[in-house]
Length: 338
Image (cartoon, rainbow, N blue to C red):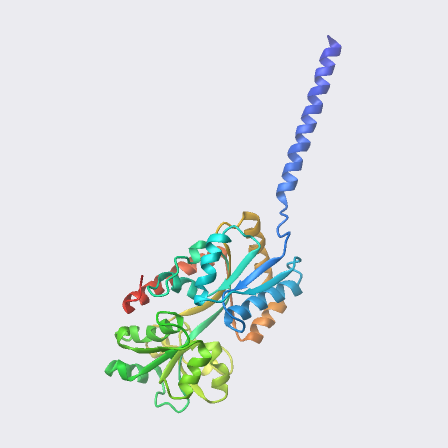
């Protein structure tokens, strides 16, 4: 009997130790993620040289240089439809592909809401990871223009909107158009009466302005700086909440300080797939938070002429919902909401 009891006690002890070891092993293996194990692709849903492309390449370059990501990283260009072509593929075929990220800006909201060129997919079909930078809209005229401030332009538009030609580097209802009509709408002008001419990119819009084929253009600040410095154009107003620093931009008033409550943020951020795993999300949340604090990233942002403004995934998602409401309202008054 004593032998049997001793054997049972021994067996019970062995089982207890074995189970504890198994459980300990599970906790250890679960506490450390193996992501990423493969190469990472970052997509710029545009051709080379644009804002998405430059942001993607800077993002990849600094992550690699600082060894924050040890796996190989590449940039892919997938142009078409202002990002809509890529989104259709990403939201269906790649919705669980943790190794494919992409860079975007307000068009991911605009394309999903507008009637023409509508995309059934938007930021809600992704996992927002982080906002990296911001830019703002600019209302720009030739250096020799009779318009000296925003109100002088808006007063002419109010008298006869059809006599002032507004141009931009995106299609009607897209970002440049919305930046241009926002101050007019806030000033009490019917935005549907404003003559808007679209060009293929901001550089073509500036060429049209300099060639006197447009009276005013609306675009992002960063694409106008070299022309301002060369004395070819002047910025009447920016859509920032307060004046921007720097030798050139500190002299440019906001729309708000001219009595027109028109703010529009042109952000750039990084997104992952809608069904991104928890491990992958945690990795990128931590990694991007470290990236934006590095000297290398800060230098890159300054070199590119961007404004740094980081938002983590949750804060970014909240901000996107706020801008979605603003875009929805503008498209509605234009009659361009789907």
